[in-house]
Amino acid sequence: MKSLPRLTPEPDSTPAPVTAKGSWIVASLMAKLLWTASSDANLSHFEIRFCAGPNYSTDNESVIGAVLPNAPLESLTNVGLANPGNIAGYKIYAITTTGNERGSNTVTVTRP
Image 1 (cartoon, rainbow, N blue to C red):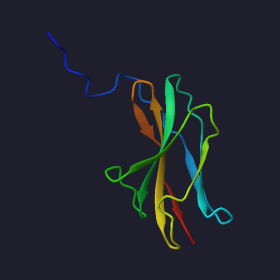
Image 2: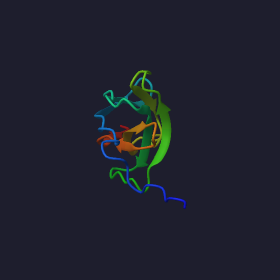
Image 3: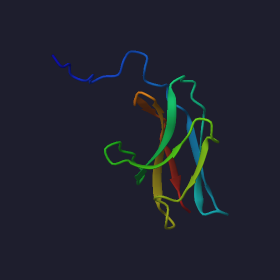
Image 4: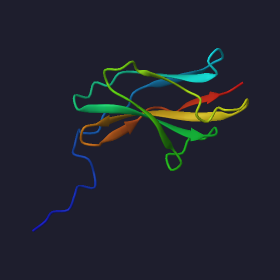
């Protein structure tokens, strides 16, 4: 008899969210995103996700990058910020080796 896959993560298997912050860097014309480390022993990587506009929606987010846990916990991006006045939201997801994930707070960056 075959068993069905789990629909929910194992208890205590979802990582704690990291705390993110971001700012517009005039000299590089990019947003700089920074986040805290994860203490999860099974951390695989971080994913940087983006959503256009001032209201972040997980239904409309797109993955724009990945960072290994031992790399600097920062990223420069201009995704969603090509023109003056553009607003973009970003989240950093901690993802475990089992595929469980948890997103950070939303960071909103406006290009002046």
